[in-house]
Length: 409
Image 1: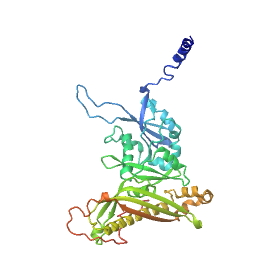
Image 2: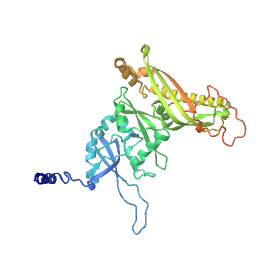
Image 3: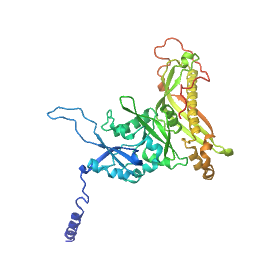
């Protein structure tokens, strides 16, 4: 009897809790793939939102047509980002859905003139955008990149995300900065941030993700070129894989102009900052493992030959890192986060040093040591391809290091 009473009383509860408390159809939403923020007219924010358009390229009667890029862009302008987003339905007919956004682009002009912390505030407050979405600076007008057709991916937003992933993983000539990593940079003590840089290149309209944009207090100041970005990734301990080119360690002028390459398979960098005698001394130690990727004028016959080549590559990398650090010191930008180390180690000292840290960093002594070790598995041949004659190995100090151009500005 008690069981039947319990069943009878539970039936109304089940009926009350069944069904959906809120009804929203899929056709009410437009799914955002990418968004671009640019400088608009009269100081407004120009928002270009790229939506996924699930269209099919298949024809009728079994015929097939070329599948178009599945994306459509809507441009709105307002004084705030949120207002520009809420104006999307009056042009697109759907409410923007941000759960699947791939990238956030910020135009170079906007990044130079406005504090991007204010521009990105909406994306930190709204619950839909994911904290893992990458942020990047676009050369020129960011919204114009959405007009370029992707190579393989369905939308240009997905193409941009894959460019960052592959570029950072295999070349180290760009970086991948998720939104939450950028938030951590803004919380740093040195007020220096870095973001990947993308731009349209060539007459064929190809998007290239290479280089890093530097920001000071939320505003863009300069762009680190791709060659120096590799060194920056080493200093930040974010170098996964890549190729380092270096000149032949030969004595003749002709051989000095020829280049060889070294494949980096592992890299670990440690930075330690000493604060004795009212001057910061920055110690940078980098351990690199890899193997020769291309030899054109070097023969490795003995263990000493291998050690000489390791030493040559080591000096080449040290010179490259020193050049990049010197450029940062000239700009008075602590990109490597030495000031954050001082803050964590001695907050009282940092409180006194922080107002003049830019100048102190520029005057700091920087000691760099690189240790290069060859992987036995990578040395398949000890002589350049097709060479029969013996190649003499010698290393000269003072030679042209890595064929690098002048530091960036």
